[in-house]
Image (cartoon, rainbow, N blue to C red; front, top):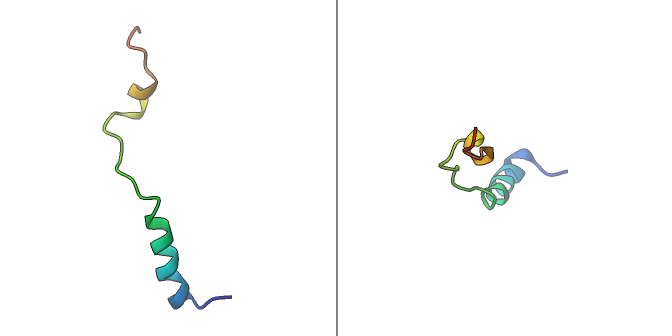
Length: 36
């Protein structure tokens, strides 16, 4: 058990390692073949 005020900043720092830029293409375009 860790105090929230102590654990929250550490958890945030850990999660920021997984931060990435959003994709530029739409979700549907990533799966479209263009031959519709």
